[in-house]
Length: 115
Length: 117
Image (cartoon, helix red, strand yellow):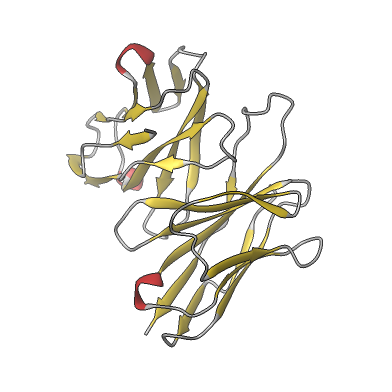
């Protein structure tokens, strides 16, 4: 089965705190792609990162960082020094290889950053 | 930066009516998709479309749904007889073919919020 689990439904932090959003995936494919999207209150889906299954190098982009661990099938997302503008729903998604390009989304984690 | 454009942004329709949601994908993209998000829930794949035919569809995409690329630019999703449970945000997306067949991203539109009353 192909599945993405984001066990944290809601997280609330105070501005400047660090926060990690968890993502665990299931797939039998050896080649696959993982994504994170941000959905602010306005509703659009904002692309954050794409990672393929052969690249386990962690990535940092400003205050954002991603930790990909194939051994635990996890692709966690950390926001350092959170800001109120980070408040949104964050989705992790999996694209299995050679399946018509569909994305399988997790349930999403609603992050609320309070001033 | 190129965008995927969806119209209308919000549509209200009576139960049982047909509705057509429109999308203009990025011009050099070859793969097109529709996703649905019921309020407060996850984003769900409906259908992917390539070379003028459906390449994959989900269980949600039953006979009430159809997709079409009527001209060189538009990509439409039709719901023949809407039900209350079709109320959702519908996202269109497109992607380009890549040399590495799997290594491509998506551009999502801003969505059409469909309300069935």
